[in-house]
Amino acid sequence: MAIEIHWIRDDQTLAERCRAWRELPFVAVDTEFMRVDTFYPKAGLVQVGDGQQAYLIDPLAIRDWQPLGELLEDSTVVKVLHACSEDLEVLLRLTGKLPQPLFDTQLAGGYLNIGFSMGYSRLVQDVLGLELPKGETRSDWLQRPLSDTQVSYAAEDAVHLAELFEALRPRLSDDKYAWVLEDGAELVAQMRREVDPQTLYREVKLAWKLGPQQLAVLRELCAWREREARSRDVPRNRILKEHALWPMAKGQPDNLSALAKIEDMHPRTIRQDGETLLKLIKDAASQPPEQWPAVLAEPLPIEAAGLIKRLRAIGQAEGERLGIAPELMLRKKSLEALLKSGYPNGPYQLPESLRGWRRERMGQALLADLAGAGETP
Image 1 (cartoon, one colour):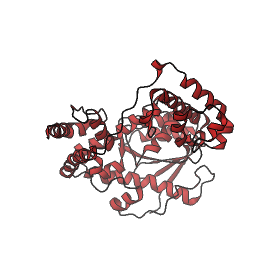
Image 2 (cartoon, rainbow, N blue to C red):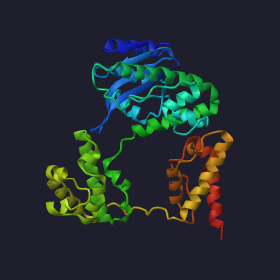
Image 3 (cartoon, one colour):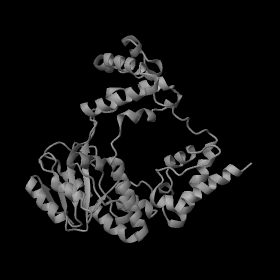
Image 4 (spheres, rainbow, N blue to C red):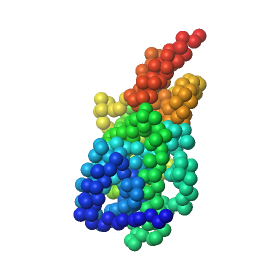
């Protein structure tokens, strides 16, 4: 059956459709975008499916995104997306708003133990029995006019995403449905948290090996790189290669020749920003000691791998009882944060990242297991 496609290319039509969509129990939302040589994604298309038809919104023609933003924030309408982290970024850039409540069909597949982190085509095939044509995700979504193949691909996404929701929702218990929405709310919360450029140095590989004064330099390098990437709208590595950060902080070159010898230092960076980097390194290195960051904690030792495995088994056993993909149960970062709170002898504290139903169902079992491990001779 041919899909009925409606184009939305002006503000008035978008406002009218958003008013109508806000009367529905749910809408499916998808985006197509380009992100080849930019920091931020460039929206090429926004698709909305209402379970019957596909609506294609042209971001190159729309000026007033407020009605769509109001729809996204309307708590009476469930927004259905799939593997949506980048879609959220696109929607936030366009409207300044994020969807809530959010139902991610990839997460729902995991909660039903259909599979973990399933691609859209595979999930559609498994749940709806439909084989989708090869994707157009790598094509140019900023070109106009879009090709017939692109339009068909985008419209099918919107329609089948709505059908997925209608098929998955009845299979989820009320608890699991609430958990999918809870995880969706966490995805939105993560997107809303503005990353402070001054904290990015903590994520650099081997940063824990640096002393406080070197960390002060690393902090400023990472913050400068992030701010420049955002302001120039180019990828971070176009500003300064990631692998150059640590040796710059450790060696602190004081001339262009020394800077050029840094591994992974691109000649373009030397030409464009070399003097700026040298001044930044010099200024950061001369900060008074009271402004230096604290030394970072060392990674967990190899011996902790056994504990991680044991803790993960608690999540896997609970996942088997609940019929949930084991990978959705306890995330590695949460387990590592738990161990770091008291390794090796405790006492341990549940990390803030272990929240919601996972904390309620597994938190005490994790602490009890670690307490027992500490008592083992």
